[in-house]
Image (tube, rainbow, N blue to C red; front, side, top):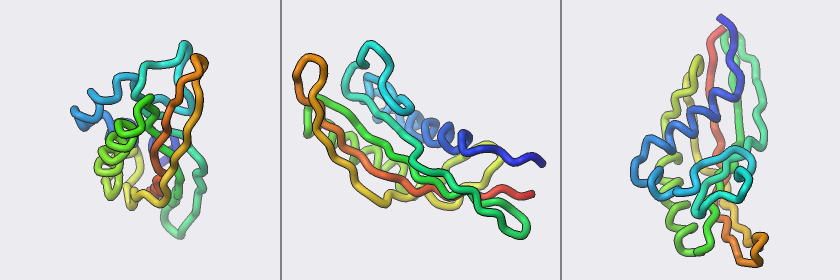
Amino acid sequence: MAYTSSSAILRALVQRVRANPALRASLVGGIHEGFSPEPIATYPMAIYTSVAMSYEPTWTSRLIVGLVDVTIYSRDQVEASNLDQSMLEQLDGAALTPEGQTSLICRRVNDLRNIDVDEEGRKVYGVGGSYEIWTSQNA
């Protein structure tokens, strides 16, 4: 069997978020990898970024240990915090389903907060967290 890459983990994470109808409907700007599309997406939206994905060989399998940041962006600080709580409830402890891999751990390990100013000079609040994700693949 050929090993699969960490992109299967990112697809599984997005599938898990989209599986929650209320969360999906609340993210009217969508969920995007790395940055929002141009022109700037409608708020609120979620951005996920792969921070690190390390491959660890074992005797009979390969572990992928990953760290993914997921941040909610909104013009309203309370809305961003509330949606981040929903994201936490959806992902922390979740059994992700990456193709060709077995999900071992998905847990939040860090909080993220930032305030930025958009092109219109208006504040945009970013609230989210870093998720540690472990998967295993048999050889």
